[in-house]
Image 1 (cartoon, rainbow, N blue to C red):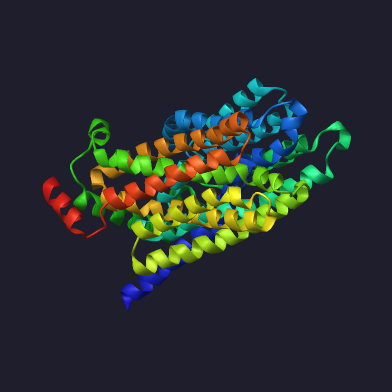
Image 2: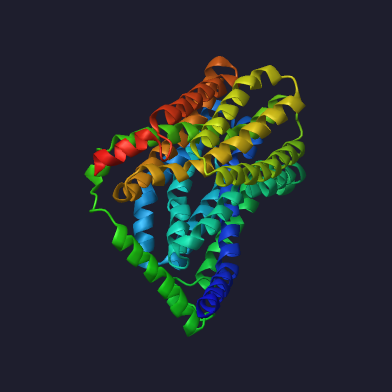
Amino acid sequence: MHNSSATQHDDATFRKIARRIVPFLFICYVVNFIDRVNIGFAKLQFLQDLKLNDAIFGIAAGMFFIGYVVFELPSNLLLARIGVRKTLLRIMVLWGSLTVLLMFVHNATSLYVLRFLLGAAEAGFFPGIVLYLTYWFPDSRRGRIMSLFIMAVPLAGVIGGPMSGAIMSHLHDAMGLRGWQWLFLIEGLPAIALGVMAMLYLDNRPADARWLSNEEKQHVAAALEADRQRRRTHAASPVHLRDVLRNPRIYVLSAIYFCIFMGLNAIGFWIPTLLHQVGVHEVRDVGWLSGAISVCTAIGIALIGRSSDRRMERRWHVATCGFVVSASFLLLPFAAHSVTLTVVLLMAASICIYATLTIFWTIPTAWLDGGAAAGGIAVITAIGALGGAVSPSLVGLLKASTGSLYAGFVVIALLLAAGMVMLLCAVPAPGSVATRRSNMLRS
């Protein structure tokens, strides 16, 4: 009876914490993703205004991820020293300001520089939130909280697509500014406001939260301490970075994630252009169709994730989704004269690439040793982000050299299919003979 009462009290405490901090962080992530990919809408106007081409756009879209990779680790180290309130103030005010400054780009160089700085400013935002949540929620509760943040990505598309289309359509040439300039101005300001609000609204740790009672703080502290004790009991010997870098599994998973991220960014940055190319000429309509694709993506992620959890199967869910994305990309040239078929293919690709991303992260933690997991995940994330930089650049460069937007999608489709074959061949299923033999060798 006493244990039941304590569990109910814990549930109430963590629900209270979730209601307080999760909605705010969720909104921050929605704004974050809108500002990351809104250049895909802006290009429908600014390429012609600035006399630039798709190759320059692709490189500019990819420059974001170069800055992100370079500054991700320093940003995370700084968060641990100064706390999340000051970190979000710094990150969000900087990225919001740089988004606004994009309205003043006038040539390729200024576009490259600002996109690189935007990636550098945003570096550490998502990993920082992941770290912040470990201060508030024990391991057993963090999974369901984290799943909300993946859902922020399609929601950003639901909101950002129609909003971007409306801004560029209705405010084009208002007060002497082009529609794409209004886009960067209006969509950059919320990040600045949210950064200031983070400083005023959030607390660095439960001990600082005046809205928690002393008893509630003790419940949180006890739950987190129990996690620490559990990890200490089961921890492997310390693993150094050099040991992580010598682990071939890291490179197998990194190569797979690189391919997944290439598909992810092909979708993220080129949907507006593909829709425009097949005959959706009004920017407003491009926005609404992008929003509709994002609604279906959110529903699809939930259904595929539930299927994976119910069957406790990961590899074939990831691989099947990856093959669907690859097939959709390969079929896009055959839908070049059909808006409906293009939308269907993009919808299938969008659902499956985000489902692939969501389920993929259950695999490294299951396949890597406990000691190698932390460093390995950092390496996999960094190499994946480089795939994010290569993808839009590749599509843009091949468009400029071949005249076809589809050439880059064909290359990415083949790489993604190769990544899925690598996953099925090189990564054993949990509990398989290969896994048991590998575990015996390690011990």
